[in-house]
Amino acid sequence: MRHVMYCALWLGLWAVLAGCSGGTTRPVAAPDDQKTYDALPQLRTLDEFKQYVESSKKPVLVDFYATWCGPCRELAPEIGSLSSDYRGRVTFYRVDVDQARELSDKFGIKTIPTVFIFSGGQSRRFSFETRDTYVKALDQAVSQASATQSRTP
View: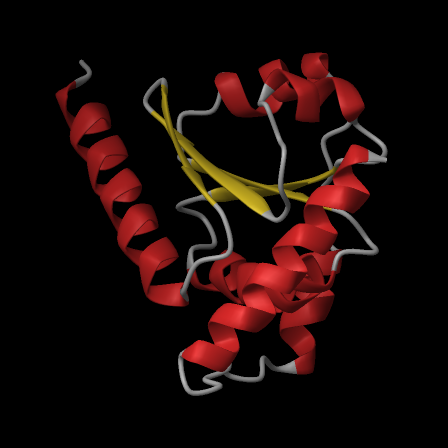
């Protein structure tokens, strides 16, 4: 129930900010980007998180979302597009907060969408950001991972 409240609050704030910024909108994503997003694997348990995220040598992007959340649905194709652009360099997962409450509680998810980028034992947290913000963070994570792997004997 609390996720409903936070998403409604986020939607209201987002609508106000969009109105104040001259009504700028995100570019419309290609239909294939939504299909790519829908095909991303989902994490449902802490054990899966440990197995696939914590043990990954590559950076990992995890999108916490809900199927009923408007901003989440708007961000989904962008995440799908990024997963295509970073194929082989970054691993992408989704977490439905309604189906994986243990995971969403562990990461203190109070608003959605929330996106984490994990790399080298560190994480960065984002909410509904521009593509450029995610690209910069992913490029930095990929660069750090490459540097770490090249130093490992």
